[in-house]
Image 1 (spheres, rainbow, N blue to C red):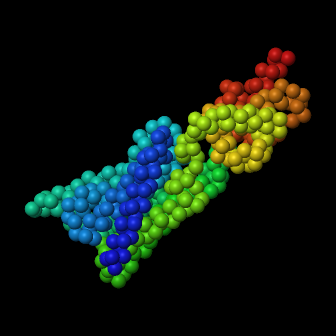
Image 2 (tube, rainbow, N blue to C red):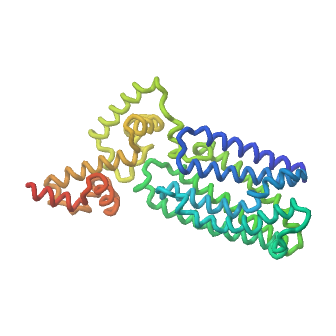
Image 3 (cartoon, rainbow, N blue to C red):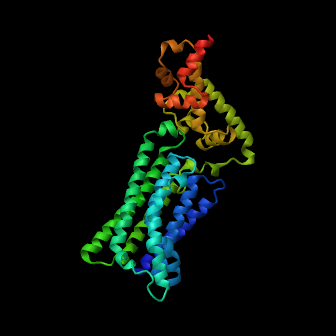
Length: 370
C-alpha cells in the first residue's frame, strides 16, 4: 500500500512541476496565469508534505506543514478568484477579494503556527490546541468552506457561460468545458474527502491515514485535467489565456499582413460580423484562414481582439443605419438585431463605449444636423 501511495504522490509531484514550468515559461503573464501558479504551487507543497509524512522525513514534514495543513481553506477561495479573473476581470482583483482568505488566515494564526511551535519546542506552549486538534472537526470545517467556494465558482461559471456570445466571442466551448471540469475535479476531491471523514467517524478509522486516499483522488484528477488539456485545449490553460504562446515568428510577418488584407476584404464585402452568433472558428471557415493564424492576425497584426473587432464593425454598421432611411423602418432594437447584436443592453453598452453616445443620443444628433 505504501509503494502505491509513494508512486502516486511522486507522479503528482512530477506532473505538478511540469505544469508550473509551463506556466513560468509564459512571458507575459495575465492575472489568471499568476493565480494558477500560486494554486499549483500550493498543491505541490501539499504533495511534498504527504511525501515527507509517508517517509517520516520530519524536517520536510514541518516545513511543508505551514502551507499544506490549511490548503483546502486557501485553494477553494483561490479557485473562486481565478474564475473571477477570467470572467469578471478588474483592477485590484486580489485586494478586493482578500476577505475570502480570512478563514485561512485565522486558521494559520490560531492553529498552524502554534502547532509548529509546539512540535519544535520541548514543551507545549499553546494549550488551546487540545480543544481544536481533532482530525474530524478540522477536516469537516475545511471541507465545508471549500464546498461553499467551489459551489460559488460553479455558479459564477454558469452565469458567465450564459453570456458567452456577448462577452467572449473568441472563446471556444472546449475552453469553457475545461474551466468547468477544472472546478468539478476539485469539487469531487472535496466531496470524496467528506465521505472519508464520515466513514472514519462511523467505523472508528484513522482519518489521518485516510487522507492518503484523498491525495490519490487529487492526483487522478490532475492526470485527468492534464489529459483533457492535451487533447481538448492548451495544457491546463484555456486557449484565450495563452494567445501569447502563439506569437508569430519574424518570418511570418509578410504572410500575416497578406492575411490581414484578406480578412478585411472579406469582412467589408461579405459582412460576416452581422451574424449574431459568430465565433472565431466559424469566421476562420468563412474567410478560409486557419483558426490559429486568424487569431494571430487579429491579435498581433490588427492589435485587437476578435470580440472588439467584430463589435466595432457592428457599431459602424449601426451608425450607418442610424444615419440612413433605415432608422424610419426599424426601432433601435431592430437596428441592433440586423447589425448582429443579440440584445438591446449589449448594443447600448458597446455602442456607447465606441462612440461616447447612446444610440438614441447619436440618432438625435443626426436629426439635429439634418
